[in-house]
Amino acid sequence: MKKLTTTLILIFGFIATASAQSYMTEEGTAIFHSRVPLHTFSGNSENLTGLINLSNNKVDFYIDLTTLETGIEKRDRDMKETLETKKFPFAEFFGELVSDFNPDTTAEQSVKVKGEFKIHGVSREVTIEGTLQMKPEGLLVKASWILRLEDYDIVPPSLLFVKVDQEQEIEIEALLKSVDD
Image (cartoon, rainbow, N blue to C red; front, top):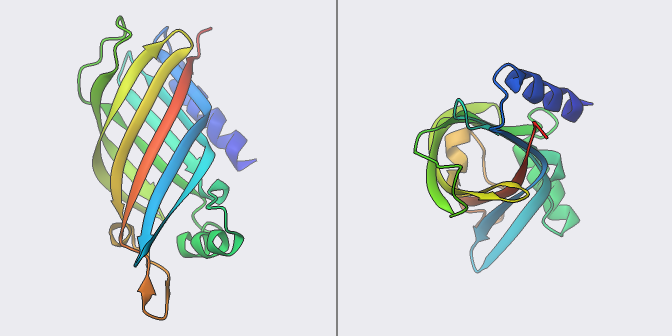
């Protein structure tokens, strides 16, 4: 129900400015890479939801953190407990495209977005680099950045002297389809 409500808010929030330049997905991929001493692991979700409006450069993405999986159930439970997903179920970004993007070419173009990233109840202004590429099926988005857990009041889990690294590499990829089709 929360996902439906949030999706409706995203759609109606952009309806007023929708043009042939609004793109949306509910099936993007979010991946994180993490480290503990002598080991790395990754987790992902196929439930990244996002909207980009090229007419006003607005960018809005969110993910239900309860959908993240690492392939190990205990680690998944520990991660969700650390992120307090019952209290803070979503990670969200709302901002704008601050670099030029030419939708009339199919070449992959480097872009930057600037805005508020919120996770674990803490919002911080961030600038994220990525790429946009027009495809026949829609707008392909790729981005990556480093998230420091302590910046969002997240205490990394530990077992004895083994602690999860503060820095988490985040990657997203999504094919957004025109909302005007």
